[in-house]
Image (cartoon, rainbow, N blue to C red; front, side, top):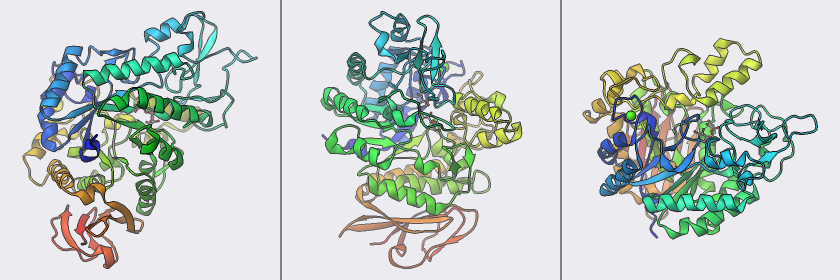
Length: 543
Ligand code: ISL
Ligand code: CA
């Protein structure tokens, strides 16, 4: 089977913030259909659709109450079928978000599971209280609370690595695995081209012993990347995925390169690629909420580790859980446009399948909210609660949380400068950034030098360039603000990519692989002499 998923660029849609079609302020499936032509025009060939399933929406759809039904806020199954059909007409494939570590507590399985003698009891992870009547162990969730919730109905605790309304499924129960296989077949038959597998490397819990005490996610050594997970992924691959022409990308929290190599080794037949977080945490202490100084050389070290460590990467700089990259590693003020293009150059010249998150192609920035009361994200609210318990003062909590909150990426898509940003004619579910009057698709499509057109051109360049797609990656130079790397097909072609992550001019040695003919810049220069303007990106054809 072909490797179409290595050739194409993926566009991630976060449905509730993409396009509203009926004025209720919530993006929906008919809205997505109405924008397929724009996605095509940009040059993306695959859509990753964040969850559209039936859900109480405690974690914005990552809490599923029926895997075979559509959230009425987003439309109907008929709308979904139409989306598959309309996408196919345009040769766009769709991958679904497979959220199977947990379900919603409102899922029928969980409701039945609360009866002690139900055949569904073992679908979830139930444990009696410990000797003091407290939670079975000291594990804490990704949302910063105990990972156990007491259920009065059956007198036991259940495990939830995320919100208490997201109980973890029990992957030691073969019946659960069979159910998941059926769900996967269901969506593959509807027309899916594969899956993005949510937090896939924590599905198997190998013991329930206390974990080493940590600020967050205590207990992780008992459930991150355990052997049991590999076995399950092989089974899903063999019994479901191998029957279709499709691919999977697994989101992997706290994953090591060693485990990642096991997960994506084509011969082991588990996943095709994974999302890791390392490269987005260069300027973060302890996971992500405490800032530290950005160093370009550190970024290049991390990129090198993963680019050379895996045969094929999932390359991304944004998603619905991350701040906007132009606000994070770029400059969203004076050098907004130039730095957004520099980051586009990075994304589209690394080795792997590139993922663009909605709005990234126009350089959307972090939100402009002024207080925590405007926020929706569970993780943000959890971190705020945790910091408050350590008596961190309000101004400092806001200062730390603001640049990292997951809501930064979740503000509605900015299609136009109109009221509602062309996203909705009603009251949007989450505040629209006021800069939509300046930063929007309509304006950028009409201007040849815009960020949108830069993305479009870079996608065209990558599509027709074997070296940029498949060439080996090698680091060439870095300092605190500049990185340079090459992509090479031996005996054929070499490109050098030189990027400046600073408001200050930069420089590289002017020798070896750093001399060549300019093929891309974000400043309009036509020769390279070893000096860089602020936030400049240069792609050279070396030979
Ligand atoms: O957001 C994170 C890092 O900033 C993670 O801690 C994140 O919660 C983790 O990567 C898991 O994310 C996925 O599963 C969650 C859901 O809330 C996220 O939106 C989803 O991408 C639970 O399903
Ligand atoms: Ca709507």
